[in-house]
Length: 332
Image (cartoon, rainbow, N blue to C red; front, side, top):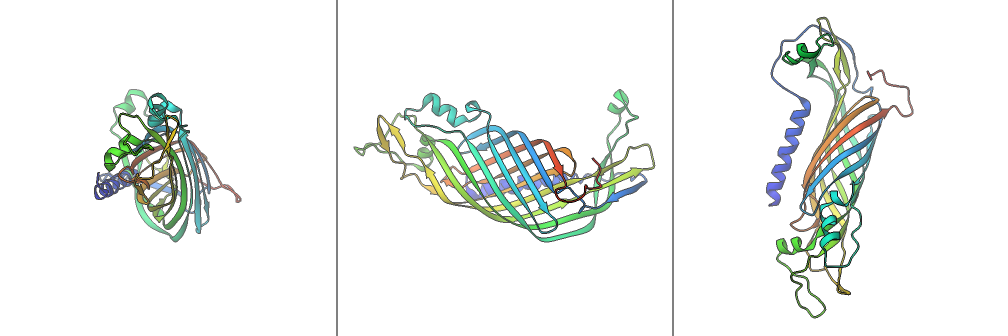
């Protein structure tokens, strides 16, 4: 897959998820409502989330597992993030599982992990009036009565906080990879001490990368509650949505040499990739206990022609609180 095609795929995924998260559907009849509060600056500033499920589909490896993530917002100045993920076990680490069972080289294949840390400086942090949609729901409609009711939405006018940010950070990744697949796409060979190419060998190795990223983000924060004069229950929105795009640079790429029949075989002739990119969307909610999700795709630095990746993350529970100040007035 060419870099250009991958770039357009990433843009399409980013647009799709932003459109889905914003939920800008068709027009609905607007019921009468009263705004109870509307302050997108009055949010919790510390978010701790457990990710019981993630999926990483990449050209280098395919993994699934769990992770932890945290974020802190410092007023209107900056926010910082820290994240870690690893697999449930070797059966959810495709190349590691294959290497342990099938590799002819006698190397160790360590556990997959990904650690990321970074921050976003708020270049522009403003509030403006906007519209959004909320689901109309009533507890009085139960069972088959609710099931037979066509879901309706109301378009609410309120404030939205918009943050244009500059991002910088780094990440460390370790993964098992299939050397035979790399050699095939790069049209290369590995050679033993007699300069003979290795054939009919199932060879795996471990790739460790340290990546620095820099880019930009665009975030929307809503934090309002409304009360309807009709039969519908109170509703609102407390969504925090962040779309981002980063350029990735790897100052350190280490593809381990392999050991075959007691001989160390160099992997130095395998071509590396030092530049990449990614785009993604993260969504969470300004509640003490809630959930969130995220998706990103792009080209990871590491091995040439093997950089494409697509990651999905689901967070639950997601715990949030105000750190260092009084509790927010937002609904639980």
